[in-house]
Length: 363
Ligand code: OGA
Ligand code: NI
Image (tube, rainbow, N blue to C red):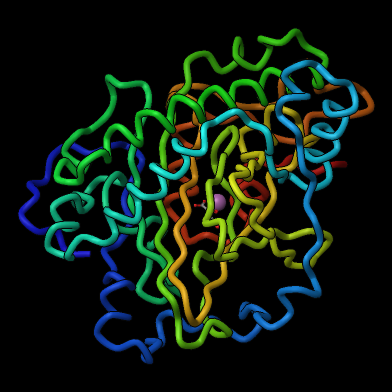
């Protein structure tokens, strides 16, 4: 995306992504065209016709039971994080109105004319704003997706120049949803601390204060969904992700036992997944699982990934309680900033980044 008049200023140390055109515009101008840069290599193309057949159900966690300390539900959470890396949260207590307003705010943003959206385009050296992430070379296959990335919490680190101020209710919608999402994420982390054998604040004591960011995705329809990917396979470089997705339009797929499994939307549910940081802190007990999104011919799809991330300076590595003679340390320590820079500095290639720089070879 071109920068339209936004002055370059100091961005973040996180690094940047090359500018790419808006896919939404591309489709608007020529709905049939699928430029070569989006056409995946044969082995990476999705099977779009087997939607129903390969539709496993990923674990469903009843949040209300979890909050009450229900043992069965806690055990389900443990197994979900170990074997799937993903689960859907129902009864999370976030009001339907808050979810609907959040989705409406995203739809309103992507509904703006391109010149308007470009007022919030990523400045040349920043990763926040309207644009794309992980684009690092001219050769790589691009996502069939436009994106808006905002740091949302804590308040004092927001960069308001990226917050659309002409959409009525945008800020309020993000405000309400981010608070609710933080509560849900914290409750999950509390439970995971207990499951890891610590007290409920174990993880929190380790990572201290955290940040929250939102990646808002807009996947336009595609005339050839069998050739493209909405988002290329990746794992999330965070502690935990909460994904709010379209109730009607499926697209998310996760890798499970070497197959791509569809995640069927459940109305008003929130999809949660373990991020790389939690995998590393738990010494590989909990899995940050590869996922991707596919597109469809008819309907645009909207989603928002709300991510919980540590501050840049945090040194991440397996926590003491996870390492013993039977389970030696599987990852090196690394400063979170260096980890993010590494992941953002190359194209998404599944989980190659963890394996390449952090995995300790077992002897
Ligand atoms: C993400 C992501 C999947 C989806 O934004 O990190 O994985 O279905 N999104 O939008
Ligand atoms: Ni993701």
